[in-house]
Image (cartoon, rainbow, N blue to C red):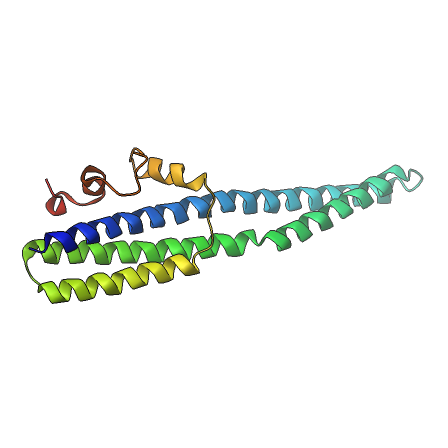
Length: 184
């Protein structure tokens, strides 16, 4: 068994698993923003319609016209902000990146299983390792940026404790793998 390549592949597997979870966290965060704007817009439009009905019944009181005009301006600002920040598109992009990382993570698991079983040659291991690393780098380049706050939430969802290292410990990687693929 090629222990050096297995170690590198395990590290890359953990990176893909974390990338998957970080993108899910970012999608969830941006989805909250999108939902806030959607609910706000519905509420403001509802108020404008109510004021329109009240205004039609009380034509001698211009206050309802002023309030409705102000709310209409607020609705326009909400629409502009929602269009400017592309919440819905960002959510979809993060979900797509999470799916891509998840598929890559599963490919790494299959490769780890093949290595443990001795089903593939050392040359094939190296070839697949490099191919998957290129795929990881492509997904990372095409993914939307995330925020620093997404990382600890992703670690929490993975039920991992941050160890202030730049590499994954065997225990952390084993936690992410099925029992049959663990080192211990």
